[in-house]
Structures are given as C-alpha cells and as structure tokens.
Amino acid sequence: TYFHNIAAAVAVVFRHQDKILFTVRNMDPDKGKLDLPGGFIDPEETAQEAACREVKEEMGMIIKPEQLRFITTFPNNYLYKNVPYRTMDIFFECKLAEEQVHIVAPEALEWFKLQEIPEEKIGFVSVRTVIQQLKKSAL
Image (cartoon, rainbow, N blue to C red; front, side, top):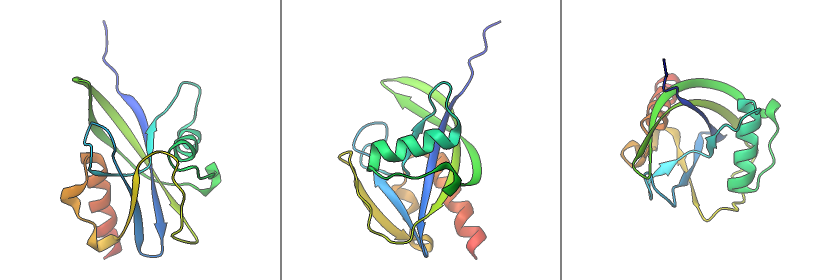
C-alpha cells in the first residue's frame, strides 16, 4: 500500500519587543503575500537545523538552534507548479535584540506590531493560524 505522506517544513517567528518580522513572497505560491522565513526540511536535517539554514539562505542571518523556541505545528497546503504538497509546518520563535536585519534573497521584510498584523495579507493558512494563536495568547 502506498501512503502519500506529508512534507516537513519550518518557519521562524522573529520577534523584537512587540513586533513580528515577515517576508514578502517573491514567487508563487502566494507571490506578494506575507510569510515567515523558512522552508522545507532536507533529509538528515533536524527541524532546528533546517530553520537555521533557511534563515541563512533567505536573510543572510546566522542563528543557532539553541536560539529557537518551539511554538507549535500546523498542517498546510503548498501548491507548487500545480502539484499540491501537504506539509506539516513546524514553527519556532527567535527573539532579536534589534529590528535591523539583512536579507540575501530578493524578498522584502516588514515588521508589524502583533495586534496590527494584517491577517488577510498572509499567504499560507498555517502562518495565519499561528499568528491568530499568538495574538490570542498575548491578550
């Protein structure tokens, strides 16, 4: 019996005080929408290692696994070139001492106060759901 298993992915919620850092997707799926830094986990890689690698690739930032705090997981749909991937997104938080960050990939970065994040501009349902949970827990 063949089981179509999910792909594992990671996302990092960067926080500075009461603000969350978002990337703006420069490609489909959800081009132009808000997202969190992250991506798929490679074989033989832990979720924390994947998060650190993705942040380095996307932003040029060096973070270490011990800087990451697990938040939650949430299933997601990732449609790439008309191929639907079901993913399990693993979310981590990383606190930053300052807002100044550097990006390598041609993506834009935007900071939003947690309670002012425009949820309708977030592309992926998993990211939107986690942001809603963070907003509720902050109240």
